[in-house]
Length: 221
Ligand SMILES: Cc1cc2nc3c(=O)[nH]c(=O)nc-3n(C[C@H](O)[C@H](O)[C@H](O)COP(=O)(O)O)c2cc1C
Image 1 (tube, rainbow, N blue to C red):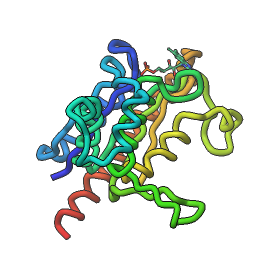
Image 2: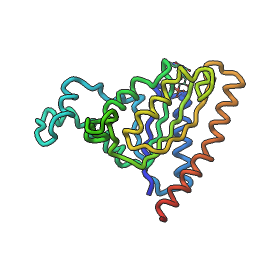
Image 3: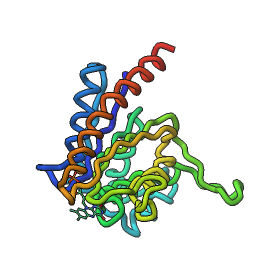
Image 4: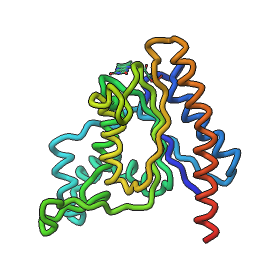
């Protein structure tokens, strides 16, 4: 059985393009594979807490020696990491805000990329001391941009701090396979926007059927 963590990061509940993509993604997956388990995490309307000095001290402390207050302080992080551990697929639906990810989503990243839970740190490894603990997960990025041309080799590639950032940190969540479908031109509202929306929604079933077939092959093997 495949477990999907569906994470929505748009602050908008209505008219959200990224929520439309994640809803279609989940609906299509359920249709192809009714046994899939879906975990829903809406950071757009329910942002995780920002980390604090006490939080950092607690995650670096010996887990055996945590005080009840420290355990309470990292309980939210424990729960969010548990959702990632359970997931085969992490589907992040996110807008670009100010050329990067929404603060809501960054708060989630800071809660879940955690020493000795999702990565280890050892200076014996030389200049690359960080190593992921989790593995074998797929990241699906479902994005929307008001502008356009943020892809590789395109004019605004240098300003894309959204998918590049997610790709970098996802390594520490056990991701080793990444897929991306995005809508561009939202701010222009013209025919390019309509075409981009149509293209993204046409790409979804192709991606879903590929991932569902692969998951079925893995569970049969
Ligand atoms: C606060 C805010 C900041 C934004 N910053 C950018 C930006 O830097 N670059 C861009 O291309 N679009 C930007 N946009 C446009 C959004 O990425 C676009 O409207 C997207 O469709 C929002 O996702 P949603 O439809 O799921 O809510 C911004 C929108 C908002 C509300």
